[in-house]
Length: 515
Image 1 (cartoon, helix red, strand yellow):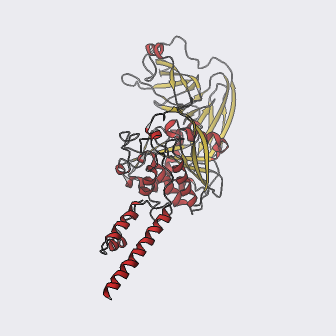
Image 2: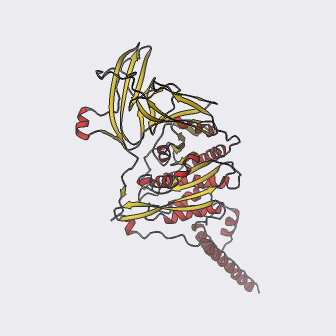
Image 3: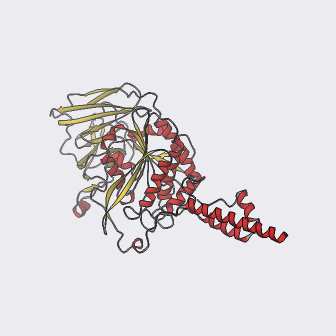
């Protein structure tokens, strides 16, 4: 962060009448302050430092990683740097995640994360995502001396722009922590535009209770980012981002001068409040969940207290569904019923069922499509041309369209791999297990099928194949990689010493003239 030339001290020196003083002070003003200096923890200062580094994953992001680690260490966190592999057209490389941990007095972990890498060598990445890292560090600073019931991990991920690699590596490496993570809050692009949005899946909407009421925060559906790696593993997570869109992101124009730092400050306050709420757990007793699978495959359960409850069946998270709303097809199944209370305590019921084949609830084989449709399914022509519909991420909306006015008493049932959801809400989101899936939807009125459609699709993990990004023959190889900043404290001391010497010589000169 540049020195403040508007301060009284600077003003007095600059008006003292010695030109050499002014020249030296302008040199001081041009030197960024070290991380430990007053004002260096501000959002503008942190963003300024980070945008001075190109931060290309595995190529020249090491200095930025060291800077973030140093800041977290300065605040007293236990810091680890974890190396993971990335693929480039110039060969294999490595990048680093930085993790700063603050242990709580009880069980549970709250994660605050932001990616620090950039889309390419020509991108300063001020909003995407130096601003997110800056807010994360400000929250870490605000909470550094506060006693918390739950542990808090501040994680700066690399590799987000080349396939969410850092978050995937961290979650794979620490799979043993998955059950302990209460919630993750991902900060990605939080300092442009005029409004912040909080995104999460319906089954994790209890996280929204921790969001402070603010005119700068609205709730919406999910977008892409590291939080999705948590969703893949059925871990509660939310994204906070701004409403600026992609006009400047991933371009050379994503600079500090285009940011709304007031919005970033609002984000800092909101996330600090969220972490305090999520990490404070006076009551750590999870909801009690009881249930069973009836002979016809109907899943029924009861929860001891008001909670957000969802079902994971055969590896697919079917989201928030009521007791009795889901009927299993014949065959063996594993069922997990999860209930979250307002504090994020998680009650779990695991069931196994082998449903007999009684023929009950089987769809007729002579149904013809019509009266209802799946809007995203491929046409016959597209299937012949491109093959089966393929999702590169497991989050699928069970949407449907019904032409004309809805008939009174009409109910829509969905079938996912034969699992029946009665009264399916349009746009219901599931988090699929990987592999092939079949989705059918029927509209029923007065016991008669009045609409039917179906499709099949393949679901893969996000960026399942190793993603190679391109740096060969790019400007990043032609330019010298920026080294660590100058040792700024010694430089500043030298400048101050020079000023004192000049002042001494100047005063001696005046004194000799008076003689």
